[in-house]
Length: 168
Image 1 (cartoon, rainbow, N blue to C red):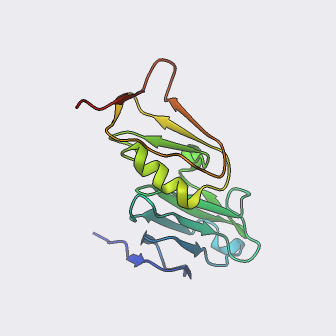
Image 2: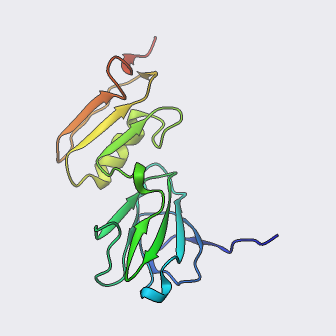
């Protein structure tokens, strides 16, 4: 059985082609290595293992892009695989990538509305949507929302998800 070499990174750096699986934390930027057409198929996977307020950004080397974007932000707890294609990169599991929606719920990236607001207080750079999962989110104290851009709070689908005052 073969094992994948893993790396734990907590500061901004340029990755090597040999960095197969990265466990990253802190507010950092990881730069994917420079690639050529002969590197097509090279895969680097990054998981954000940081706290609920940490954002791991991944960008291409020099002018290289990822899915035609300069930078991809990885929210806490999420994992993305980047695959070289020519001199640029594609997201292997990028069909779920959405950088303007934050999901809140027991099985989501953000466990509570407060965690999501804490994250937005640090990293918000455009209007966002806070999507509440299919359960009731109980709030036991006032949450002050004073953000630089608009925030829409909605259920995950029509008629699902609610915010309620906690008992007591």
